[in-house]
Image (cartoon, rainbow, N blue to C red; front, top):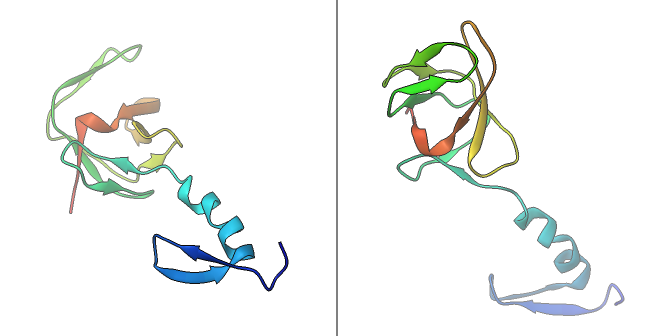
Length: 101
């Protein structure tokens, strides 16, 4: 396709250059991580636990209501990476956390 070609984009309802449409699908591949109630999570968010979780290998239980600060997304739509005192490499499932507003 040349730069003069235009394609109708059904999502926006507009005619857009073909070169822009070719670059568009890369942005749609981004993983959206949602918490237990459906809020979208992002890097740096604070979350609270919605149930008690036993941490394997650490001999600790994280209680319901525990605040986890500064999460990082892993690229998986159900896992978040975080830090907590005394536990290295803690990975939590998004279904067990709620975004703190």
